[in-house]
Image 1 (cartoon, rainbow, N blue to C red):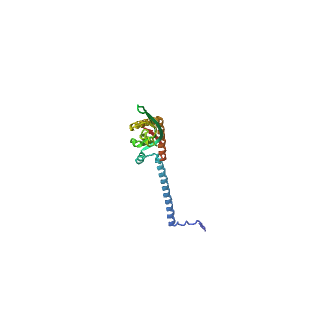
Image 2 (image 1 turned 90 degrees about the horizontal axis):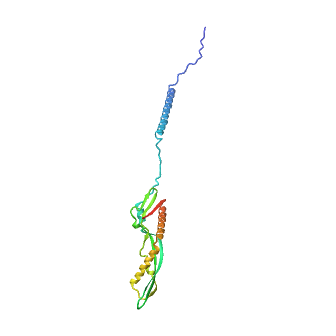
Image 3 (image 1 turned 90 degrees about the vertical axis):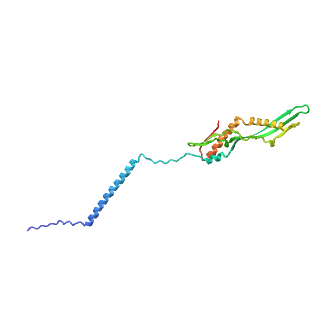
Length: 217
């Protein structure tokens, strides 16, 4: 009599809940993988599309000056750059049958040389790129024509009778001598150079690094 000994275990059936969980896990991993691939692909595509487009931030270093600033500077009016004190001795003589006359007088004066900003032309102050241009400034000139201090005028020597017209003639001679002695090309050039230095310092103090000063020809 043959005996059939079959020791192979009979496979157990898997729990349906476990199968569902495994299936969902595989599906979730697959979805995550697909999303990851899509995100990476999207980033690479955007980088490729924008590789020629760059964002640059620049600082605007252009300078400017307001009409109010120009007006306030122009209101300075007369700006003195050179002051010269002078004294002149002038005399006159008169001969007559009755009595000779001799008059010597000393005149003192202070001549102020500079510019009058009230005479500045339109657009005398402007900006060109990174430079502020003080352009076509009025000519250097004598700021006050009444520069003789008549209160200090003294008669050094006086003999005879002299009229107001005689004294006026001496005044005019002293005036002309002071003009010739003091308002010279050298002094005009000195005042102009001082003006350039003063304008440059003023605008640099206001924050303008490059300053160019020009005068009327």
